[in-house]
Length: 241
Image (cartoon, rainbow, N blue to C red; front, side, top):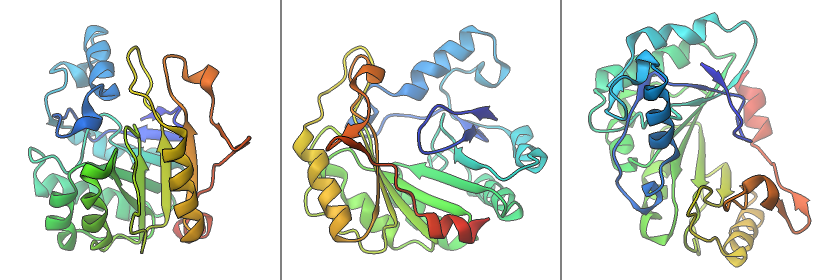
C-alpha cells in the first residue's frame, strides 16, 4: 500500500507487479521505470524487476485499512496479464468483494482477457473497471469493457498520443484524459482533449482532465478552458461506500 500522487485516486495497492508492453501507450511505461528504482533500493517485492509476479501477502492489506479509501489496484502491473492466473484474479476480486467500504479502481490494457473472464468474477459496486486507450487504434477496448458485468466502467485516455473521435460512450461512466510526461514525452494536441471533453458532455459522462504532461508536468498544469475538470461518478461512489 502507498499514498498516491495520482489525481484521481488516494492510494495504490499492488497484489501483482510487472508487465510487458502491448501497444504504443506502453512505450515510456512509468511502472517499468519505477520498478527498476525500487529494485535498486533493495525492495523485496521488486527483486525480479518488471517480471510478472503475484504477491500472496499483499492480499491481506485491504483488510487492515481503518477508513474508507479510493484505491488504484495494480499501478505497477496489469491484473489481466496472461501470466496472472485466473485463480489469483479471483482472489483479488474476493478481497475487493469483502471490503465494500473501499472503492477499487482497476485498469487494464488487456480488454480481451478481461472480457473472457468477466463472468467468472463477482462485480460488486465498489469495483470500478477501466481500460486504457491511447489512440484510435485501440478504441476497440471500449467495446470489450462495455460488455462486462462491471457496475462502474471508465476509460483512461493516458497517455493520449492521438485523437479519439466518435467514441461509443454507452454504459461508460467516467473518462480520464492525460498527456504523457517524462524526458521525451510525445505531444498531446489540445483539439484531441477538447473533442473528448465535448463527447463526454454530450453523453453525460463524468470527465476528468489529469494533466497536460510534458517534461515538467507541474508547470504545464491541468487547466483546460481555463478551469479544472475533476468530475467523478459521484453517485456511483456513494453507492459503493
